[in-house]
Length: 297
Image 1 (cartoon, rainbow, N blue to C red):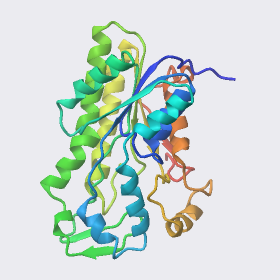
Image 2 (cartoon, one colour):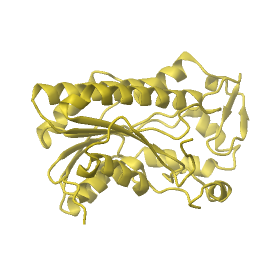
Image 3 (spheres, rainbow, N blue to C red):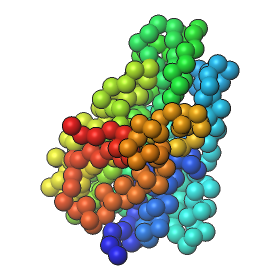
């Protein structure tokens, strides 16, 4: 059996409150390897256009389910890890506020010790479009008119970039600052992107902000490598975190070579791999994890 050598490592996972989400699965996967896990979370309000879409779109019940899951606390994930004999704690904060970044590390260090593995999973997804007065429901592309707020705006851009790229960059910088100041020689950063980050209609700012995050990740991998920190990206395909309805799953599965949608554990395992001893000579890389949904050309 391979030993990832993660026993007693301290891991910080952002966005870990959805019990059916990637962050929660990742926290549990690290805990199963004997790591101590600090879980960041933030309960975002349900976007107004999602409320409107619920009455107009085929996949609206799944959207409602997803956003209800996003309103959970991370405490049930913490309780699950502790019940299995692991160490875990959580703290709620809005990563759009830059002042919480050092506080997050302070809280983790006070409870568990210096952070050695950083997993940037938290994201804001407030759908916007270049089309005037339109919005689209995730997955179904059914049109909802009369919602001009969801046309691309400075607000929609700022919401996406504040968390999905700026906060990720600042979290990496804070991780590096503490790591270098303490003279540590081993560190791992794994950032969660999406397999449409190169550009995607109907959800333009979210995908663009993820593309920016990928650029930050590669730059960080190049600069932080001499200090023993690897930086890699996991890019998920369609993962069932509560948003995929049975109808949508039936439509997209035939286009996936491995013939199923992904589960959060599929992504968690890839994240743990990048933190493991087995990935010790890998940095600055992007790994698509989507059953072949997207492949490098």
